[in-house]
Image (cartoon, rainbow, N blue to C red; front, side, top):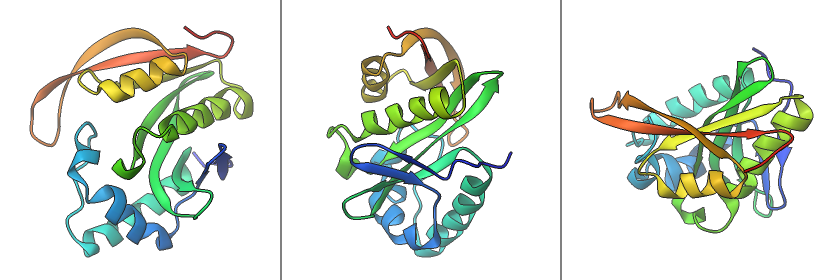
Length: 179
């Protein structure tokens, strides 16, 4: 799938396609930080060479998908990533939302999630957006609920990094209604 939506905006953020110049910022502020990877399905990046390889994969992925690098408008600094993908006709699902821990608890996650919802409903004509998070990820759960998502169900999963079992909770927001 080729993505024709190059950018999304919120009051303080620009979501745009990754460029190689984002490598240093994403490596230092996000990819190398174990606390950022805690509830995700990726491992922290340990070296500059791994970061360069990861950026190459990120650029290619974002070019072909509804996925973006999250940047501060004021500085242009890359601080995270987010994306969505079609789940069924008119329904989209998030593919992950990760921000540098330096930007947690400041409303940036809400801005990103609202930008994704706006893209889903107004630019893509979607009828629903589905999000999920690990059950123990209280911050993500609270974010989704605060943005009008309703809990729908849970699924057991196995973490490919270490084989540990965990539970994913799913939330859904309809275009015309909020919880």
